[in-house]
Image (cartoon, rainbow, N blue to C red; front, side, top):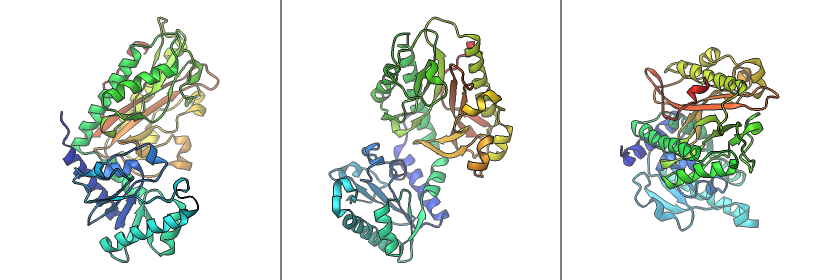
Length: 392
């Protein structure tokens, strides 16, 4: 299916403006590369600009969208109907400005203030999704009313259009194929890093962009979770667990997690039990999802984790997906008092259902994760990547 990129960009910009207005923000300056791309469809050095604030976009509820791009890159937005004007970005970062950083921050702020007042009036509220100290101080000095733009952007991105869903499905297929490509070359004696590189290779060769994490591990590296890929040699009979975390075509976050035993040995009884419990948790929680279900109600009905797994539980049970990990996040019941916020699932949300079981002190763990679309009839998988049914 060919994706109507113009229609998808139009939907995203409209959602951005709509949610800014709902949050009483007249215009926003978006630094986050994911928010910038969402609102405009324009990408440029997405990883680098995530830690160097070298490009940003001014998006008003009404009026022209102005992209401030890295020097020499203004041509990247020539064909984008979502951007009315492109200007060179101003930077105040010390590595480029040195002792002139405060001077450059002042120039940045004055240009934004002038644009805000011309477009939205003298009493307008400016939203910012990522605040940096020096320009923030200048905006405050000039008595600009400021607001957090993260909230409206997260809510805007949480409901997908038909074009976005089609794009996500296509990118997920590239991810599934990358997993198959990697698995076909998996054998005892190869390293974790080698297998990780194969998924990256396939993804980039087929229009993908990069990988957000290095979560591919084997054997004792799988418990507890979050040990990054290394030069460890994978042995026959070890459990291999990987969280793809690929940024695929169209910038889609392709978040799929699978696990399997490497080599010609059959899974042990302990490995089967780990896999069965992870799979049971995943399926149970997927079947709960439907529009209108509150986050609190989901948590109360979610799979009851065995006590031996609780200390090593994953960070969350559910998280949204789009360009990255997005709103909403549903935590484990043990973490609700500290972290959980209110809300409910909606039709059109794309979320990942997470599962990790790793007994305290155990030799291995199993993580599974499935991206789904929430429809009026419940959750529908966004990938056909297979599970190890013969382990169950």
